[in-house]
Length: 275
Ligand SMILES: O=C(O)c1cc(=O)[nH]c(=O)n1[C@@H]1O[C@H](COP(=O)(O)O)[C@@H](O)[C@H]1O
Image 1 (spheres, rainbow, N blue to C red):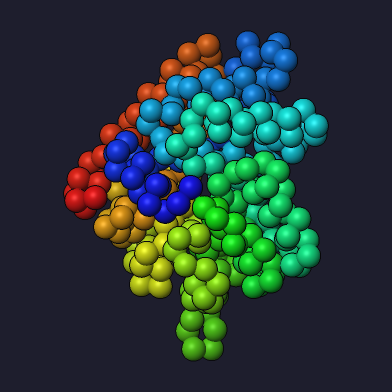
Image 2: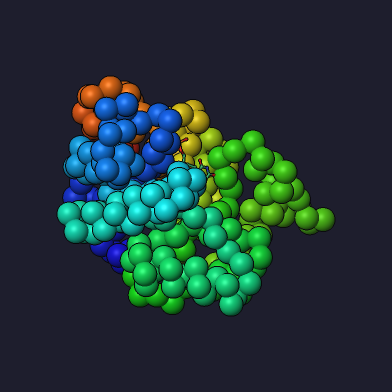
C-alpha cells in the first residue's frame, strides 16, 4: 500500500486505528477452543467486528509462533483473510526482525513475497545492511523501532553520545538516509508523551506506528498533540484494550465498541488538526 493510499484511507474512515491481533490462547473465549483453529476463528470475528473503525491490523508473531505449526497456520489464514475480505487494511507483521544482510533478505522474502503483508517491524541494532533488504519492495514498508513504549527503552534508546545525541535520535537520523517516508515508518511508544516533539524534529513526514494506548496507559490526546502532521502521520495501535474487552460470547461486539470509541476520539483529533 502506498503512502497516498494510506492517507486516503485515514481521511475517508476518519481513523488511524491499528488493531493489534495478539490472540493469547489463554485469554480467548472458552467457547472458541472447540473450533478447528481457535486463534484464526477469534481473529476472524475480531476483524469482521472492528474493520469499519480501523485502517490497519498488526498481528504480533509471538502469539502465533508460541503455538508451533497451528499458530503459524492461524497467522497465514489471518493474513489471507484480511487480503481477501479487507484489501484496504494495511497489514503489519510485528516480527521485530533484522540480521546480517544475507539473512534479512530471507526474512524480507518471507514477509513480502510469501505472506504478502504490507509492512514488517524491524530492529535497527544491526545497522544498514540488516534493514535495507526489507526496502525496495514497491508499496511495502519497514517499521523501524525508534523509541519503544516499555521501561527498557531507557536502557539503550535514551542513552546519550558525548555530544548529547540520544541513541533513538541517531537511529532516526541515520536510517532516514536509507529510505524516504514513502517506505519507512518509526515505532514510537504512546507512553513517551512529549518526546514526540523531538521525534517530529527529526522525522517530520514519516508515519509513526504508536503502540501503548489502552493496556499500557499511553494518552491518545498527547500523542496527537505532539505527533500529528498535516497528513496525520500516525497509526495508533491497541491490542489487549480491544481484543480482550470481553472474554464471553460477546467478545467481538465488545471489541467493536472499544474500536469505535477510539475511532471517534481519532475523528475529533483529525478535526482539530484539519486533516
Ligand atoms: O513494535 C510494536 O508493535 C511494539 C513496540 C513498542 O514499543 N511497544 C509495544 O507494545 N509494541 C507491541 O504493540 C502491542 C501492544 O499491545 P497492547 O499493550 O496490548 O495494546 C504488542 O504487540 C507489543 O509487542
